[in-house]
Length: 352
Image 1 (cartoon, rainbow, N blue to C red):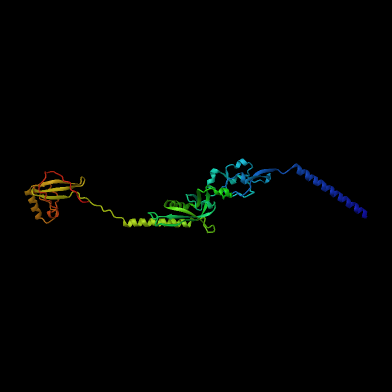
Image 2 (cartoon, rainbow, N blue to C red):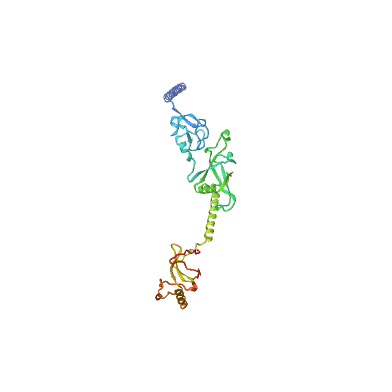
């Protein structure tokens, strides 16, 4: 009985070994008939900051299983010529078409909505320009002289803790120390669109200088720069103050009415003359000349009437008898000594 059990156990073990060998052969034969397909794609050999150029020194080819390559993976090195990183690409990450841009699209890469970029040109004194990199924070200080626009000669903050967008067109931080030795010529600052007016006025009325900012100083990225708004208020308040002062001290223009149509009587030894002021020609025109007897009559008529501007009696035969004449006491009397010929006009300079 015991021998029979041993025989059955040996048979079972033998069958199991045969089955396992057969299964292994089947699996191995299937694997050899369908090998895994691999493709080469471009991956970043180091971190590539946003807006940095993709070049041979920061990428490499790497084999990936065909079924595991991400959509948009670039396989041809020529396809990344003159391309820039649209966003930060980490080392070992696949280079995708949707993560790179052409040089023509590069200018606006990385500018957040509601922001703009302004240029600060470095003069003969570079100051801190050679020490800063894209992403650093700086302060902008202005030096101003008193003028019609500036309230006083002073210096004050124009911006505090604004971010540097690019240095000489480079938006990524430079890792090569040799490349940093060149002199910086321009810096791009990232500011809110509401602060663009502040920047333009500060450049127009003052001299600007950069200082290093504190990266730990709190900044509200969704609000205009507080220092910039204070600076603009400083200018706006002074402009309003000047406007009010000019309004208060403005000399009122008094309209001087020139005489028009007045009659002036001039006495002479031979009689008197009547003149009328002509507005158009600005002259006194002789309208009547009387002999001595007629002048005496006119004087007597004025003496018997106390009303200023009594009209002479038409029966006296005086031309223009319907004209209202001022009294002799109210009319300047001029003694010329002789009488010029009749119908002559005299220009009289009158004070305006």
